[in-house]
Image 1 (cartoon, rainbow, N blue to C red):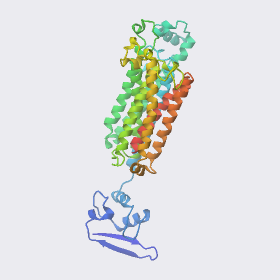
Image 2: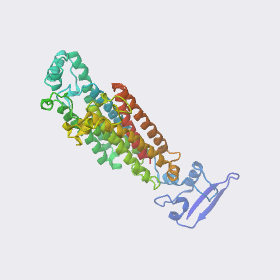
Image 3: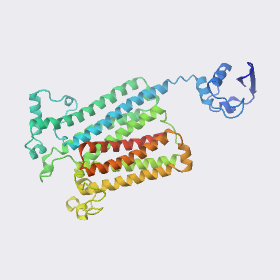
Image 4: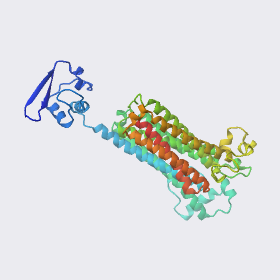
Length: 431
């Protein structure tokens, strides 16, 4: 039996009403997981803090807070989640910066300036003239220097900086990730949320990213790859893998951080929004594939050909003899990552289709049932961001191409592709 107390508005008198039903069947306490005795003071406190509709009938909005107050929840777990989310957001921001610096490194052709891989001692740049002379002598053994024998020490220092800075940021984000990881693990915060598999996977992915980066650079240091006098550069396949891994790492850090910040790691999507969420997942895959064709464009320097839009030369489609060159296997998939003309054409087609994919996503969200579920929610605002980002990204890509791919615009274009993916990822988390 439960006594429910109500403090009258006009008369300071205590009224009581008794319910003969068991506590677990009482409509006012149905949300409580474990029936527990409730003191009159606890009930009176709940009445003061929450709106009470009617005297003892109607709909009540204080059920969950009453259960929390009875069970003694202090909200400390929520604070712990936020602390971890801030840590993951910091790491994600650093990865975003690494992607931008990596774009600068590629566009300034600085990626082959460091010809060895020293994960620990490589954090310290050359500090004396003797150190610089040693690094320059190493660089002279590379295929890139053989094709550019007029390179001076001063010019070498400028390209060396961007490659060193890119590697330095990679090592730094590793320390920023693993040091707090150990701290949170010792405090039991990770095991409490069963986050070990996810966080260890992200950490391993970060380490793998560094290894892939070195293998990518190594592909541009082997003389046998350039015996046909082709330009010394890294493998476009490894470049795409390197960039794709960075994208996956960034998205993993961001979505996990949002889940922890909002406490939705185990939240189930409502039946009304499940179809939309599936489409969002497909949209993310399409945008990711578009970004990988962009990696092919960057790896093949394809942004410096056909600098016009919407046509490519005299037509909307380049001549077939340019699209399917025999030395790249004709109609073989090799064309995408070895033929600059095909790479740019594929990227154009993927970019325009991405605009259509997001447009269709917006139309699906206008379905009356879905629109009602999204109304006045953070997910609705995230969808608006997705719509803005896709228009921005496509427009920026066209402007970058028509201006013959200047480095600042190209770097922002690459960063915007990651921002578009992030907005989609956050949107699906909020659904």
